[in-house]
Image (tube, rainbow, N blue to C red):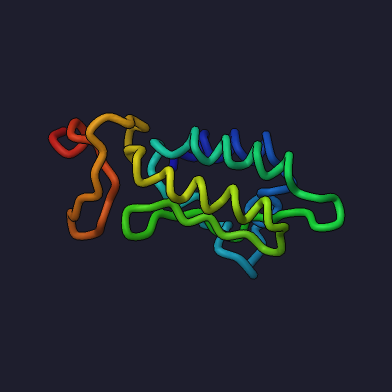
Length: 125
């Protein structure tokens, strides 16, 4: 994901992205978000939901965000059941959103060395 998009998320959700902001070596967040830009909106919405459902006694921190086997993988430390439910839902939704452009038209998992979730236009272009 482009650095400016990652910076927007860190600025909007500093408590979630604490390990990225502080370059915490216990996580892989110092590497940043390891997806293409098409899932930016999905990740942004997921972070909004997490902030609404997390509890003060169990604050959520993101450990890693990446693409694996054509789907979003969103790893957190300790969290409540609602946070984990929101993450599962977003991960499932990612299979219907083009990782490159964010389109929901003609999206399929495709193999190009690795497995990606892409629309027809991004495969052709």
